[in-house]
Length: 134
Image (cartoon, rainbow, N blue to C red; front, side, top):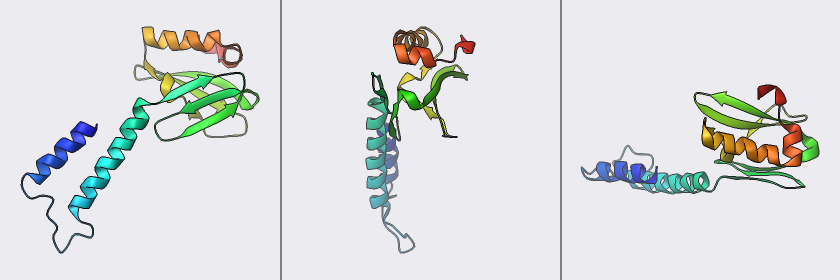
């Protein structure tokens, strides 16, 4: 993603596309720098996604947010299959919105089975897995 953004900005700058005109509310060069910084931050968050299960609860760092939920507040862990992907959603008591474990999202297959096995191996997570789906 950062390389694509850098390539597009370089391509645009090759024909004076980053030159400022009187009608520009913000300089195109400033927008290019802001775009590169935002892409770099999102790329870093994407690479460093993680989910950790311990005795206290579930710790998760997704692309755009991080959260920690105690086991007592989790209603269930639901396995969702969409478009060839397997995702794990965390259903928290009292919340309408469901949190997704970005680090556990995998293409269906061997890697998805490994994620499911890891969840089954953890005592608290195994008890909360929606058993009807397996």
